[in-house]
Image 1 (spheres, rainbow, N blue to C red):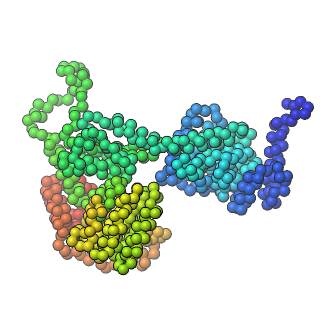
Image 2 (tube, one colour):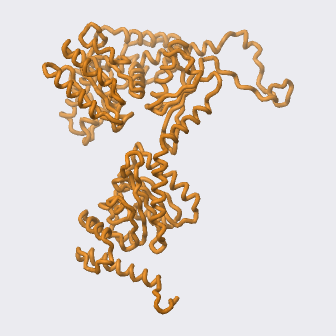
Image 3 (tube, rainbow, N blue to C red):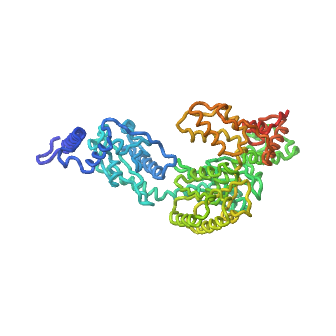
Length: 638
């Protein structure tokens, strides 16, 4: 349509600008410098072109790499998904796509309102998990917004990459309202030619909505947990909920003995940390057997808490039957035969509860390391100082570090070797105390004290003086000590430090964990030969399980280190092991081994030699039962 004299055709003007931009882009890519008029390309776009050329970006081929998804997605990703979904549902005819990029330029979320545009974005790898930064694809609105930390809009030929010139995008930064730091950018993408001046305004509005949702995220999490808590709060039911930092209990749970309530709190925290949700029986210190159920609490696909409900065993009310079933002679009455001798035979329920309690006791007897792991997880979750005792090399330090890293990936670990503290102990401890007092913040800290049984009386006193001020800090560090002996002796110098620890756990030696020797050996082998194709044969695993391991995991590491040094690749066979692994263990059984052996023999006698039933009575796997029978030399029981 021809415009009146003196006016300009907007369409012709847009085409002319696009042609000039494309000519400027091609000349820049060919000559390596900008030769057109200065007002054709904006300064921020030209600066981005220069950075893209410095990064050696291929302008004709997409080289975006898949970097993967984060295991623990930050709250900005969940909030962005919620905001994007709400916008697309409210604007179904919006021909645009929304994306969130993190501070590194990696796509973390995307929501599409146009199918054709979605296929186009898939083709250029603007997909969650892919690196779409300036170093990978050149100039985009998101890359300029990340560099300038301000809103930016890019149209068609202003993109450095030729496959992106068919797009127009606008980006706005998302500012964390808590720390006022940049936590990502929101990008609104459309076809080139379909952009509007409101595209940048829309990006800024969505960024503000995400920031507002981040600010209300803690209250939203607490609200969801409390809603689940109120929904399960019935008369006579214990209800305990946690988000990992705080524990909430109802009136029925608070009426329990203090030791019973603490056991419930430990269980709900351990279930959240280990993500172990099931219905199980729990032996309470004061009230005996109880039936408890742990359930996860989710928010936008993220695990935010755990809910525990329970009652004393045998006190669960029977469900009410419908009126039609309770009426005698009704056509909807139960068709099964009535058991008139049920009350005469005795209390089958009591026998079942006794059998379940016995299974739990046998499981704890035969798998002592599992109980130790649960206690450590609960202490880390509640911030209770813990003392671990056990023989040298049983993996006390590894157990604590793995569980602490799993609970707090960004936490800091400070290790102190108490055995090396001598004359310089006062200076080192003063520096440690001052450093912790100045460095502690919201970031969790773990103070790991190794070998405190090697402290001298002077060193124990100085360490006690250094630990006392840490309690008064706003966020005191978690203190975990290790004693390389099988039992605690309060008369030794380290007995002065026992008051700083709330829990004491004995970590069993490796000879009591023969079921896990194969998994531990494979884990150690992966660390020692990370880039080699080495694997353990089944025969080697059987040899390792039959050895006593007096040096525990440290000795196992030495054996595998010897194997790796002599066998570069391939499957490890028994001849590759050192001779010490084939030595018999003619030794006297310990009290724990004798108790385990007696429990297995009793279960085999009661099941008349049926190993399937015996394993079920003991609460362990059949393979574990077979290994223990071979280890203890138990004869066949018919």
